[in-house]
Image (cartoon, rainbow, N blue to C red):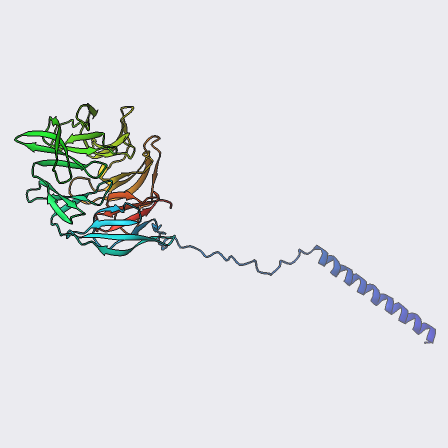
Length: 384
């Protein structure tokens, strides 16, 4: 075979191999283009939210931070200093104490506690503080439950027991006179005198022998109501301080307890609800002679007026019944007596509160009270 033939055969061989290679490659490419794209194996971003097991989760407790305990002492008739810088109170042994407020912006504490050097008086039930001056009257509890009173003169430093014929007593706003009911030989009279009952003057005869009196802030009017009345009606009445003008205020239903507004134009009173036998708080407007049910099941002893004479703060029992000798568990409310708009403050989650002897600080943003559950002094921050 010559060289020319060999070259021709080699060329033919290369052509056949190239053709076969092209056919194989084309078939491979066609298969690649028709197959589905492979699924990415890159993992999805992890879920960083921690799952909550609702079967074992403890419910979140909303801790009340607006009710604070101020004292470990058991207090009796706590009241604001006349200059508003602290509190004064008695203990159960008849000792008189004073403490100043220390406010760090976050909370109030008591500091500079001191015991005043006065004689110890036993069986003090409560203190009648005057609007002015440093004297006071102690209400005493007798062995038969009968009330009696003793006047403390801050100048002499001595107590003077008031006569047993006095059935009810209240301060005149000047702080240098008292008004009282005198009962003798079955006859009751309204009288005015010096705080030790000297230099007295009879103002008027009273129809009942068991009245409690409450003098208005301006000293011109006196509210009174019966205490031993067990009938269906128990009216709250008014007499002028000179005994010349008489009016019946709250006439219908069983009414008990009064609390004058600071401007002397209104007063709170409690009316017994005939269906529940519980007391509801009402307000009486003297100028309009209007009665209004405030819808709060509480009494005047668990209530205080704000200085504007439109707003009240009240401790309202959730459990327990007022007046039955048992303790109550209360919530606190703010109410506008004109619009009846109300606000409930959060209850403390870790303590029981039976609020009594309520009073406000000079600014009006802190509500102080005795907690009858433990006898200590507390306050409610009204700004929270």
